[in-house]
Length: 496
Image 1 (cartoon, helix red, strand yellow):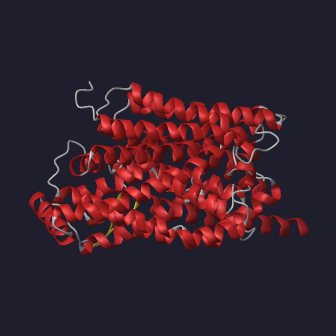
Image 2 (cartoon, helix red, strand yellow):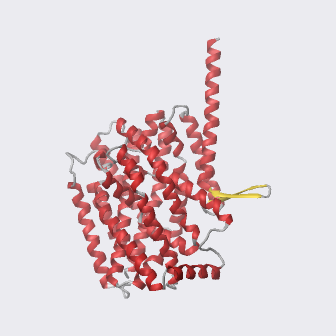
Image 3 (cartoon, rainbow, N blue to C red):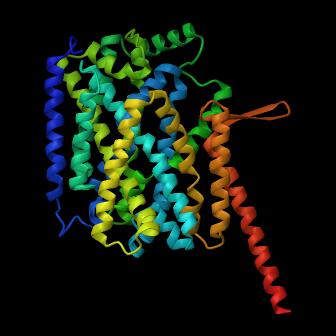
């Protein structure tokens, strides 16, 4: 099972993994509050993270281990289409700059911890709150599973096979998250992001020099796509609209997820969020460089059984073992940070908007925090079981649906920040139709992210999540208008 074990790589990997493990437990004493037995402290770090901590934390849970693996893998497989992640991570930051400080202020003023809290505080509807909360939990589960897939790929590249290494890494993650809450991933994010930057900058400087330069890299990738008969280093005209819709829809969904909202709510103020909206595009540059590794895989002549193996194979082929171990450690640690934040975000939702709302309304703050801690463990166990039992492709398909689902919470969460016209029943109807219709369309398309619409001779292909959001908003507007009209007619009749 370990005949191909790379000792230098494994030694470096173990060193850095132990380092962040210690940091994860030490984090409980970092900026230590009077007690961690409160969701504001355990789940949001006391809402005191400044610009740099927030930058590393949001960058750490937004640009994940699976991003490091999946984006180059997609570029390796399909070419230019895989670069949709770049415009989406550019589009998202004006949205963050404009909307998230308003959302943060509402959460700070009213003591909200989750998106469900915001929705209930705005509309007073337990049903709408529950819909938003459950959507967040369901959409997050496969996302955590994908982090474990990224970790699994890195561990396998070291020559370690079987389930034991992944289970051990999971236990480390589970225990320090339980102990330290959001402070653990916030502290570890410093190490993770610095390591990823080092890995990527070294790779984009050294790898092309070993492959004949960037011209040779692009030529090799172009030749590989032509030989395969699909993909390419440039978008075809027919791909432009689907590419743009995928970028826009992904951008709108990105900060609806519980883990990204957790990073926002943990910030110390609206200006901190605005500064981060200006600074975070630095990660987009990093992402673009990461994506280039997919083309480099073709130039290096790699033949892999899974596209996800491209980045590890590239480092194993072109770098000494110690640096490959450093890169694999960066990928694995890059899974720990977002997986921890994701499990915390999902746990906050369950504790506040399910347990407290429906099971024990009189739960104390310490009891609420304890429920969140236990839930965070269960969420990670569920993700681990999914990876060990279900086919990897199933987790990938569910994550595609997760983006579609979480996008349907945007009207309920955002519209109420700027006006009071919408009513809860209308937003609930829009959410239900968008959620169900989008899921049916995605299922009928074989869980592909794009759907084609035909209008006579014209054919439009768009991101399914964006189509579902459009239906969601239309239904909400129509139902709300009908409710408003009905209310006016009732008032007129009563006046007579």
